[in-house]
Amino acid sequence: MRINIDCLRDVLMYCMDCLDYIENGNIWKREVIDLQDIYKSKELCGYQKKDIMYSIMKLKEAGYIVIAHEYPQNETYINDCLIMDVTMKGHQFAETIKEPNVWDKTKGIVSKIGNHTLGFIETVAHDIAVESAKQAITIMMTQNTPQQ
Image 1 (tube, rainbow, N blue to C red):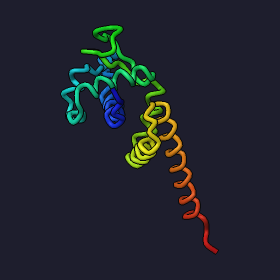
Image 2 (cartoon, rainbow, N blue to C red):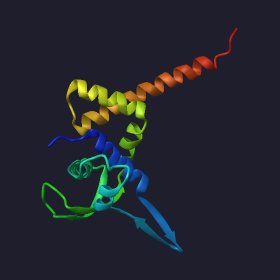
Image 3 (tube, rainbow, N blue to C red):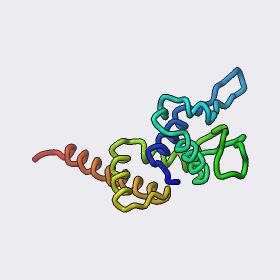
């Protein structure tokens, strides 16, 4: 099976948007995400369930998310789980790929090269984001340079 990189990105973004903490007096409660809720979400309804499930497994394997109550355990698939958190590594990756322009350029390069590993996607997205930042800084500096 191949990773659907758009699905993987959208699952990660969904986790970033939906995981939360709720304060109840002096006690914090963690809002988690159930796999079945993801299947029903409007944000991910365009993807096949197996692509969503596989994306969750790969996000966990890459250390981007933390899941619990995985059922069945120690299998090559999951029927249910609770997504508990996005790791710092997951936050960093999500911040890199959240901008549509960066994501589109990343996908273009990844498809031309043919390497769809998460490590490669992460590296390409990071490099594109850095280059975009350099261009933005150059534009800002030339606009703020006093004219003589």
